[in-house]
Figure: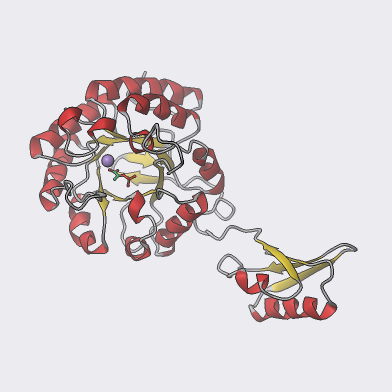
Length: 341
Ligand code: PEP
Ligand code: MN
């Protein structure tokens, strides 16, 4: 951390800053130039609140050198995180392709969809059972019953299953049925939930909040990592902007930026980031070209009658076609989707 003093800072003000740094158990590196004095604070500074220095007399501004998200940061852990999800290695050469309906609607729906997406190249099945809906009168998901259907679909296809968790009171039940717990955009800063998920031993798919910065996403990941769970997958799902042509705006930039800042795997959800099935393919291709470690795509057997997010859901045949294209792009950048030749 560097504390840059104002050009007219007095020796007394400089000494006071130095005393405060030392009081925190940090070492001091003083650089006194003709124009400016810079005081370096050396040591464990990621958990220090920089405001306490910014308010001191004579201080111009404070700059962090190390990231405030230490465990998630590539500065501290340069190697890509890799971990097993059933037989699959998340963060490895193979792309993680999570597909399935927005919501589990019935037993036959999720089983048929699971078989179809597996055939098309998916290596994980998604399906919401507790749905975070804007309206309390909208379909809220079929709950526990849906988890049983997901588990059955898993049994039949061998695909690990991903479902959204909305509250820590659902953890005990969900870990029995679900392989990856998804934290939705609306829950990204539910810090109590994040802390609780830090204590379990299952991968967490953490989606970026609707208006969250990349740093805020990484700070949320840090909550889970700090609890001892290092299996976090980050998911860009579009952010709110002034643009109304699409449901959200895909922040493609976030993919290389995140890959630069963190060792955690990064995937894109082009279904929520665009909101329209016809844009899912082009944006999915862009994500893989930009270096994403995978995709999460909504697939429905009959999008026109889906209970949620039908407009952005692909039919299995279209999904299969997109996976073939994405698989070709993957090869150019040294990645692969195993079923794509
Ligand atoms: C979802 O994946 O169905 C979902 C609700 O996504 P998000 O939290 O990104 O809106
Ligand atoms: Mn959805």
